Image 1: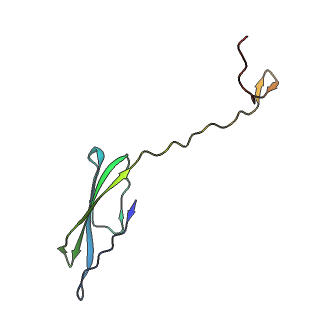
Image 2 (image 1 turned 180 degrees about the vertical axis):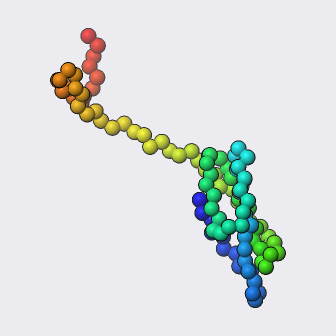
Image 3 (image 1 turned 90 degrees about the horizontal axis):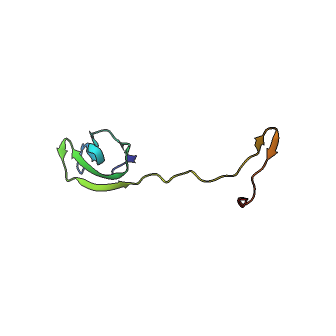
Amino acid sequence: MTIEPDYRCVGEDCETRFIWEVRGPGGFQSLNNDEPIRFMPKTAGTYMVALIPTCNGEECPSCQFLIVMKEPEPTCECSRWGEIDVNGQVITCNGPPLAAP
């Protein structure tokens, strides 16, 4: 996941940098000052993100928000039967199940 904050310090020769922290399920925590902000949640759940801009090293008001990561949707679905070889005889399955004798 990549987050690209937009915060600009005002004034001449102001350097805008960020400190960021992410907390989530299972004790997940990441604290860094790299930009852009990148982290990869490994489990579903709610993650708290805090972005703290700094102007020439002085902390400015932060922005905090939640990100909800859901379990991935299953990608497995039924397909179709291919040919079945029974002692050299090819059988195909393409109809409803047979009634029991």
